[in-house]
Image (cartoon, rainbow, N blue to C red; front, side):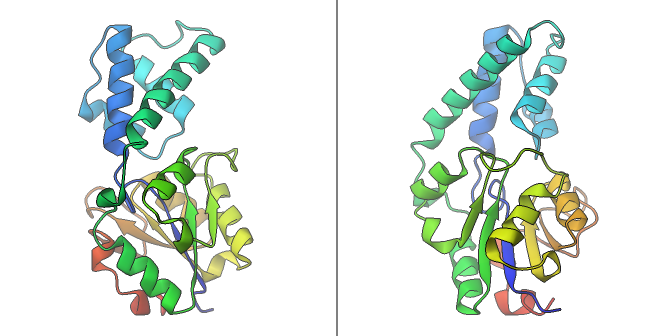
Length: 217
């Protein structure tokens, strides 16, 4: 079966908003009276917002000390700080090779979708002026299950009108690669071989991608 659609994760693939997530989580940790390091932050990769908060509280030895209402307030506060940071983003923050890659796939007649856990994906794509390059945007406002559950990618395939076997996913997180494979899709890892497993192909970034070769996978 030939490839008809390409699905992209957002963070770490198209843009690097991880630094803004980290700044917002660290700010929350400091407010709670402890340090949250970049190494701690690695544990949050590809994880939902509430699970991220649980990990952060675990790091600070505060897990189980707050009510659900208090935790929701904390998660919202972190998100407001994050939105404050990303609102200032522009096209200069698009990762190298992204535009050529998107244009290349679309020139080949392949459909493109975003599959991200971020509830702010649309805002980010708007700021980067990338919305016109996607036929569908599936983000955290449309999903109920976090990766490695395949929901986000299955919804992407459905929105594009293609079967999962006709899709290739670009992902930088292990949970995302597992989600793509669970969905029955090809997974291209973006990152280092020592950090990720279970992919069909690995690249350092979208600048290494040849759309015509991917279309033949």
